[in-house]
Image (tube, rainbow, N blue to C red; front, side, top):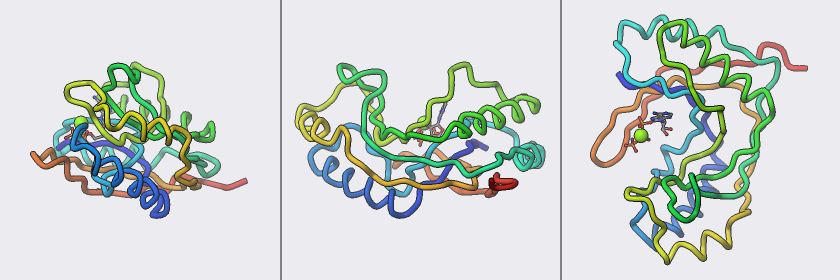
Amino acid sequence: MRLFVALEIPPGVRESLGEFLAVLRALSSQPRWVRTDNLHITLKFIGEVLPEKLGDIRAALSAVHSDRAVTLDFRGVGFFPNEKRPRVFWADVEASLNLGQLAGDIDSALEKLGVPPEKRPFSPHLTLARFEPPGLPEKLRAVIQENARREFGSVAAREFHLIESKLKPGGAEYTTLETFPFVVAEV
Ligand code: ATP
Ligand code: MG
């Protein structure tokens, strides 16, 4: 099974991103837009594991905590690696410092179970579209530039989720396997 750990986004932020994506989608079927229902913030991509490992993974994740909620501000959009030859179109996520700590703790907890650790520093973002091949359709450029600082809302997150991903021709299908409240004691 293919697994990852993610934060969900609240309905208001999802609606606001959905409205923006609907405008862009109507302009161009390229890039490959993420379905509004599928929008999430990945904390850790686990990848393929044997179902027998699920119990250990759940136990490891339930031991990861933070002493307060993670605050997230969704503002602005951009491209990875750059606008010239974009591969990913994302919404920027400004997060409280404990989010990086949380992602690092999840990474270490899973490394003990043999999941390869991240080599790159954690950089929170919300993937909105993927370019295959890289390249921005001209009709999108101006609209995206006008919305470069657009606000989508904010949230205080207190739980993360273990999600199974089934890759399908029409796009990945996600199923939440378990939800982990991570705040032990709020200050
Ligand atoms: P598709 O691959 O069909 O575009 P998807 O990317 O939404 O769909 P998955 O590939 O299963 O579905 O990925 C699940 C989540 O993990 C996504 O947020 C994705 O960006 C992230 N992810 C996938 N592969 C990696 C990887 N090698 N390293 C880091 N994150 C990854
Ligand atoms: Mg993928």
